[in-house]
Image 1 (cartoon, protein in one colour):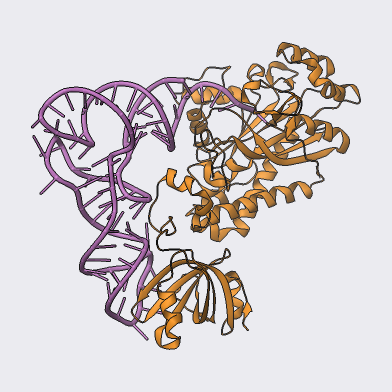
Image 2 (tube, helix red, strand yellow):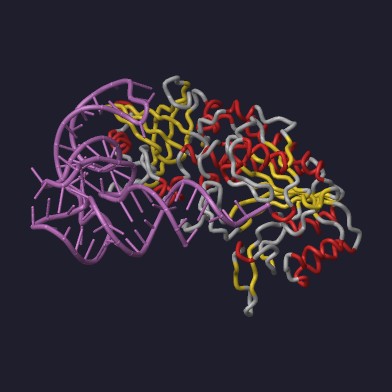
Length: 435
RNA sequence: UCCUCAGUAGCUCAACGGUAGAGCAUUCGGCUGUUAACCGAAGGGUUGUAGGUUCGAAUCCUACCUGAGGAGCCA
């Protein structure tokens, strides 16, 4: 019996008779020779089956096999320049697990398909090379993020998905029933809980799904997306910016190091990623507004950037840029005002280059109990819902802060994608909940 | 919620108001080195839905449905 190997390991089994188990990716035939291409999740293997080297029924079965049929192939591995992966298998035997019916063939052919069709078949689309590459880059991004924080003294403390109250405006939260007529909401950020965790552990991070019921229908929005959020006690804005910068550089470096093949499959221009090094350009909101106006934007001081504004700003640089000190009025209630200019807040956004926009938002949180209470009132928030949050400022309050990075936007940028919908296996979007 | 565009074969798309077509996929046949193989043949259609204009509608008009891109919205 032949040893079972994965296709990615083929190089170590040259001239051996082995078995691979997978699915038929494509089949080309030319009379008395057929070339089944098998995928097993780790790579593609071009097999070669000759009519006069195999039993009649084996050859005929292979010749008529349909796309995505499951099968095991036994054969000898050989280095072959003409084969897609550089190695080829001379078929000695085949076991067909399931032949896909000709009456209902695999719908995703090697030709072009539209967005709607592919999204309806997302559960099958994941089998194609491009999607495979994206998901593997995503995996590397997530691993790198975790490694970065794990290696820099952060403790992983995950925050709840169900939350009892709306922290900032109920319109963007998904409401769910929570026993006996109570309402709960799906979290849109772990930040408030992160602050409690930071007061307990010093430096913490959480990583999990977040939910936003915004009716946004753009290439940058999902209703369910994954976010990593570090939070640090005794950290000021400069420290928060330094950590964000260092983490982004590390993550991009790890993808370049370990996912070259995938980036090549995606036809990503890696020279653009090679330029992602510290220090990132830093710019105040004030200067950003002046810059935008000089480039023809209608933006006025006091309003947030539009999508076009982000593009104008980021196209001037080859690296991500950090914009800080936004007007306090357009930021969340907990954002620490600049002591020297209370009209601006000590927050920072990191904008990815090439028009990918905001991938990180964060800043310093209010640590003064009086100011926090004032802000809760000004924002007409229910004080009783924030009792525990206010407690954090009563028992040994310290300056602190952190940020959140959206994984899907980060992956879309690293992969150079048109839309974030491809960066997660089963995207949840406005008007799309299936499959 | 608003704006723009689009819905024709399983898929990607053609078809000036006048006989609905091609490539891929599927089936059959041919080919011993194919690279989204190639060559030949076959099957495959209530043109998103409902109305309207017209001798005649895939094509023009109205409404609705679905999708896409964008705006608004969005630590």
